Image (cartoon, rainbow, N blue to C red):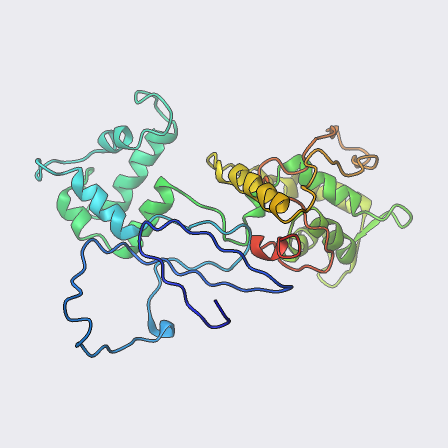
Length: 322
């Protein structure tokens, strides 16, 4: 392929893409699966093309964090929900029926758990008239926005968003990086030092700035005292308490990356390598930070040591390694 080429992959085709050179950019567009296709008049029919700029997109992503295959297809979700009524089109689905249908690794009888909350939420999304249950007509008439809300409830995907680091970093690891960014001689934190340390740890410039803004009292200040950081640290770390469902893809990616490195006769990264933890703790904090074999266990990707990088996009982070 050469610059400007577009590769079309039909549904179900396995594929792998490698990018070479210092800088690359790839754009992936996923279309809803076509269940049937009649190509009998392809050779004769005159086709009117619609520019992509005028094409409506169901899901769009800003490009932060690791790139996944995105969220559920809302059109397929509608079809799957319609199938639950097959043979019983007059059925009234209550939250208990939906709780049983989307029983997320917990006992169906459990009250207040994940599946219980999901059942109530789905009824709230689709039951716009307040009946207390869902009918086939509710699913068939559901708007794209309703289907997107349901898709996010059933299978949320925080990847590809600017707040993905809130899921990717544990509070203890965020604390570790913030602590290391404090200048020991001046006993203060600057935006430049926090950004440098945060990005070396695998984070983005945006989240580093967001954290710095949380710590500072004066919006125009460029330096924050250690005491001020200590005072607001617990509140900042609450951002990183978010949990996401277990995703084995990160481990799979790491294994494939090692295979690529071996194939290119490059040395595979040592995952047990630790950052220097001698200055982990902030004075006066009751919590003791323990050493950890992996600074970011929620994300198996290797750290990017390029201080000049301004993005956590997985493709950019790996471009020099591959």
